[in-house]
Length: 519
Image (cartoon, rainbow, N blue to C red; front, side):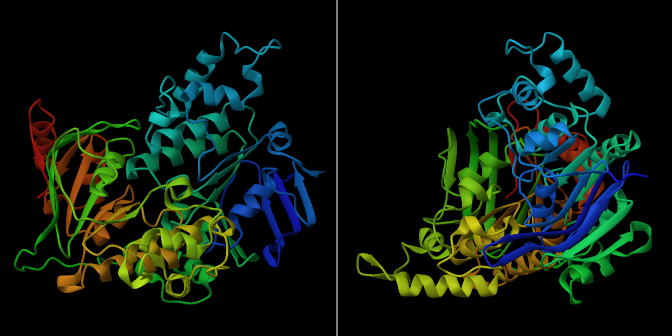
């Protein structure tokens, strides 16, 4: 059988760094192939080579048995290759429909207008794939999960023979992950080869037929998914043991303990706030105490972004009261544009967070020696690969950028840390390290910040949180301890509860005039 994609001896350099070092890779038609590796291992670089976004420095690329030298994504698309990026490639001011049409040449008439029947074709394809999408809403007003669905639909509207997915489940509830994998299986059954770039090993093993591991730009192994364990894959990715704590079933980091209630460090009282992206807040009340981790779960677009903005002091409530510390650490869900200035060095990005702290100043001036020392310590502590204080942040891989942002915000989270999907896009080893650091912060006694962890990753929420609440249509619904499990919380995230107690809470708190509290 002719391979859908074949790479032989592919090398790609960025200066002195070999992102890919003589890598061989093969994707069969109709298979789902998991591509794994640490942050900076070369996974996204490999996908971008296949998608025509990067030209290899050496080696051969074949698509459908034909050797190609791709000069652009458009050339790859003409050969049936589409990529869904971890950071979405959508036009924010365009609607979902406009973004799908923009990407697909068959949507347009010779005179440059959209074909009359194309809207119906999009709706039919969405129904076939069972992808709920918002076609008439501007992307800038959508939540992350809704944007991702538009990306997937956009990629699958044309005749797609190769589909590249970079971290597609990072923003989905468990039930939605199952739905996405069902979609992928149907797409693969029709003959499309799928490359699934991911870090959640249990998900890859559940969805993929084969898995390939890269480590520091080199091929390590390719195995049938049924013949390898998550632990073996993790060890192949990092080259050492000791990552089992980050694997599914690794156990909770925190155990419930009775103790005197610590001081409240942040509080929202019946807060409502509008949002240009998804739901706002509707009468939300919560209290965050020193040394606790309050987990907020929810499907993207239900108000989590607005909640984070209010707690971080970036947005004032339209109604109600927000009692907040003077400064809060904030790990945004989108590191590009919100977390980093890509043209700034690592040290300059650190300075953005610590410039007001006395330890980093000499009178009215920044003490750059102290800032650079802090940046160097952050690079070492967070294992930011290819990083040095003078390196531009934009040259780092996505995962290393995320580690840098998280480490920087740990520096200024004296009383409050607001963390939005802090391990999104991180490999197993880095995920464990960041989660352990968050847990350690919460154990600093009377110096510990209160931590609000906002995530669609229920493993993360369940592993780290002392208390859990769910955002549903702008309201905050506390989850009782007996419902701290993926099934119950996942159903509540989707607007329904499988157990009587959860269902009752969701219904009661969504009545007009109802007030929620997670305090």
